[in-house]
Amino acid sequence: QRKRNNQRQSSDVEVVQNTVEGKNVMTENELELLNSQWKDQSRFVGNQLEEEDVETDEISMNELQLDLMKTRSAELQSNILLDRIKLQRLERRIQCCESSELGLFERAVGNTLDSLNEMDTNPITVLQRQARKFTNTFSESSSVLLRKIDRVSTRTGPNNRSYASVTDFIVKETSAGIRIVGSLLSHPDQLSQLIDKETPTLIPHVPAILSRLDRLESHIAPILSRVLNNKQHLPTIEPYLPEILERFDDIEPHLPWILENIDVLAPYTGLLLKHIDELLLYAEVDEYEAGGGNKDNYAFAEQLL
Image (tube, helix red, strand yellow):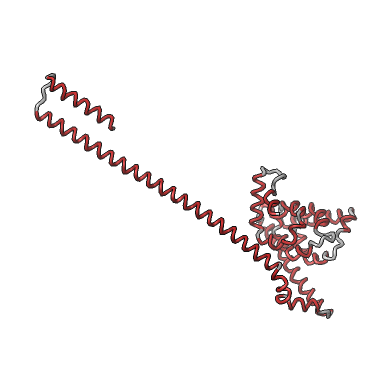
């Protein structure tokens, strides 16, 4: 616009020069009109420049505000991340204190009644205590089975849509149970691994176990050799077995790696189940970063170990 205005002014100057040279005679009115045109053009150019400056200032202000908001967002995200890390560290410290320093105090004070009951050699009291524990565990285990049947009947979740009906689910679980028993009978070495002093504690968990036989079938051998077989892991795992079988659809894809590292993981079964959703999320991230391969799927988990 400035260039066009300059060209116009140059042409007007030529007209004035030509007038002075006598090539064209201009009257005073024409000269005054020419001067007024110059003033109007100058005023118009000035207004446009002011408008452009205002728009430029507004754009610069918007960009500055956007940069400030992005910077503030990054700071807030960083603070949130730091707070989460501090919270996780605090939770680990609390858990460590509860399991070590406060463990003796809890056993001495908090569990005094249970300790007295265990010390009671009265056969009737012992039977009552065992019966109460058996009933509670069996009830919880039955609830796991009933919830599984309900999910199958409503076809809730991708793993439950593979069953045509509840009858189909029962048939597949029964077939898997028959195959498991047949495999144990044909492999006496595996059958001998069931000889564990803690094995009877699995009896009240039978309903929940029956609901997962088709998924457990391929893992029976490593479970017998690494969890039972006098490995002394069952006492730390058995109290959480209903919750494990409840979430088994999520846990089962990672069970081979878990069994390989069961010596490290078993003492922290309760703590791991408490954060199972976060742990499964990290497992999925590792699997995505590994490109679907099995080599580095658990790189982050191994760092934690």
